[in-house]
Length: 435
Ligand code: GDP
Ligand code: IMO
Ligand code: MG
Image (tube, rainbow, N blue to C red; front, side, top):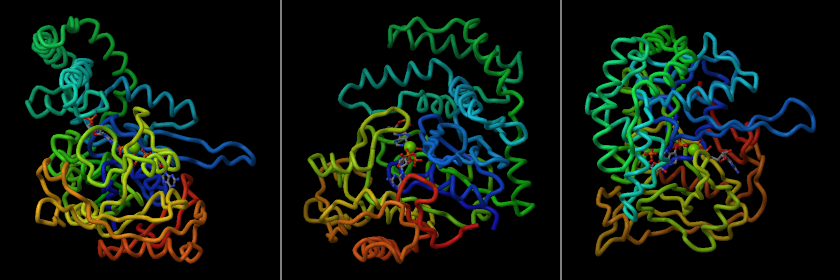
């Protein structure tokens, strides 16, 4: 069973980092296929020493498997890499005793994020005002835009002085026009950017490889490959709540194009769903709770962005979104996270349709007007009102918690492989081993 994909089925932050960290224990290699350092994947590792605090890692570009010693980690061609952010993250992780030699491989086809991408991203958001997307401001969208406009600069170019100089000069010149006229920004001088990027190159160059070839070889050799999605299906550029989305394909198609692997090699697709819903940034969110209940979920779930620290918007579990994600990605198994966050919620709601005008939609509408103005149709479940934190055996869950889990599984017609009841690795119910 060579390839297992892990996909966030909501608006991101479903707990992919924790789940990937657990699965990585059984994997040979772990690969990121899209997004960039807009992602923030949290992994909490229990300290080996008695009484010592747990260790927390927040990974942005490095696959979460990097924490597991000896595992090979890939950054695929579909990822956009800000070398400054990558070097910073590598140094942070290295300072905690993790090494990269022989186990970190960055695709030579991955595109680079340059300082002008940040300026563009942040200034466009300011100009848009109330209509802003609420991006992470990391230059992700503009870097993907350059990739698609065929003016992007790739990792392989970073290794070629002549080509890099040519492409960088051309880009700085054309961007300067935009930066000065639209943002009143002076633009960037070639030498300063060159010198800065040469420093990053020193650190990154040894890790730039033909990742397609390496993964292809893993698949042929029947090694266990774990694909780590970033963001979530509703942030997918094609299938999400456009234009309030990110600029890559967070869904399963992105895994094939973002690494160069055939769809037929992906044998299992694990969909991660949070027991409720969150979203960071702007855009429609039909089950959002703006009052006290939303605040309670935010506080109990510590729902603050792992990348930007922004408070996450919180709401009830959205079955329309989850069913759509399940179909779109061919989800074969589910992982439910943050069940413990609902421990003190007396009545729990699950959205099973959107009412708009005379119609009830149970398929995901594309129209923002419908998504913004629909009334969610809810089914209600009695809360269990007792602690589930740390439970690692399904039979020990309160009956009402079991009923909630089973209701979601029945709604989607997919079995759970994992239920997460806390931040740590051991706070997990494993129902099925996927590798
Ligand atoms: P990702 O982007 O999908 O990897 O998710 P984030 O790391 O951005 O956000 C998930 C947050 O929930 C992190 O702080 C995790 O440590 C935490 N978390 C994951 N699973 C659980 C769980 O079952 N219970 C609780 N209470 N926290 C969890
Ligand atoms: P992980 O991998 C949650 C959101 C931003 C914004 C929109 C576009 O941790 O789940 P971008 O900077 O990508 O152009 O912003 O996408 N966003 C995320 N929301 N989790 C993420 O990643 C996200 N990455 C981007 O908040 O609404
Ligand atoms: Mg996150």
